Amino acid sequence: MVAISCKKIEIPNSNKIEVKLANSGTGYISGDVTLSPGASFSIDFSVSCPTDMEYVYIYKNGTEISKDQLTTNKTYFAAAKTFTADLSPGVYTYRILAKDKAGIYLGEKNIVVTITSDFNYYTNKTLFVPDSVDKTNLTYYASTTNSALNYITSSGISNIIDFGYFYDPTLTGTTENGHTIYALNISPIPTPIAMYSLTAFTKNATLLKLVTAPTFASITSSASLQTAGAGLSSGTTTSVKGLTTGKLILFKTVGGKFGILNVNYTNQNSAARGTFINIDVKVQK
Image (cartoon, rainbow, N blue to C red; front, side, top):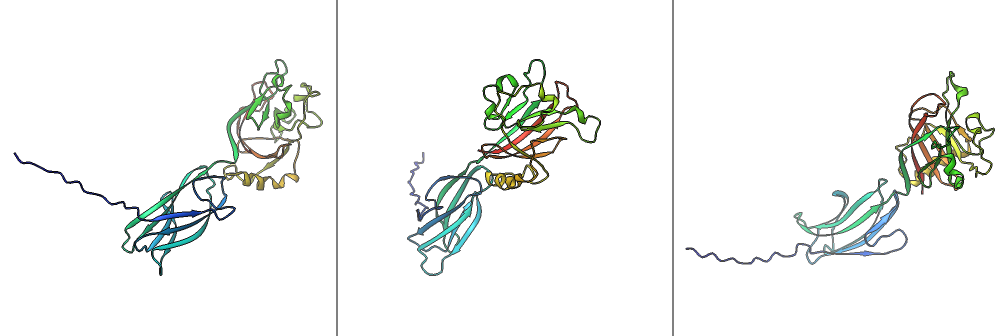
């Protein structure tokens, strides 16, 4: 029988460096942080090491975004770097990492930057034409709650309604269909919605504008909504008709929030009770 002895081997700590982060003022981060899409931020940091460093890197989610080579004092490095946060919400890890002349890893420090959306993105919302009998069709929309509302349930909360939907039968047979988004202050009131008495309603004067740019997909932040909405003072209206798949409407609520509506599809060109429009909406928080 052969006796086997085990010898414990000590593995040295490979992280030799010390990284310090300084809070140097507005816009500087000194640890994990949550930011809005596209925000500018700076990292003021220093790296010290008991042995010579050759390179100090910054990686973002594994991709190199900064590289500095040390030339004189190779045991210490300091710098301030400014970056722009991603437009897409998510978690991004920034690694400050040092290597020696042979490319051997000396250590690192991670900073986690979490990007949260500064606008609301609502999908697959369906609005129906007004129905004259039960008045239960979901014909109004409130962007603050992402709610489709009917006439009955809206009576006490009409102040949150941003716009409504109807089909204008007078356009049937013309080159423009009757699918229409409108603000409740529309005047004169068209026949399809005149059957709903809005005397006791708050008639929010939402600004509406049919546009071809920017694209719906290009809206990725509150700032991009703000920029897109800058032109709403020109060509705005209380209603937008002739809506088909892919049509875009910029809007501004009475609360000052900018938004964009994308038409996914309409089911039929008719004022019948079952007619509806399906939309996606992006709006500032």
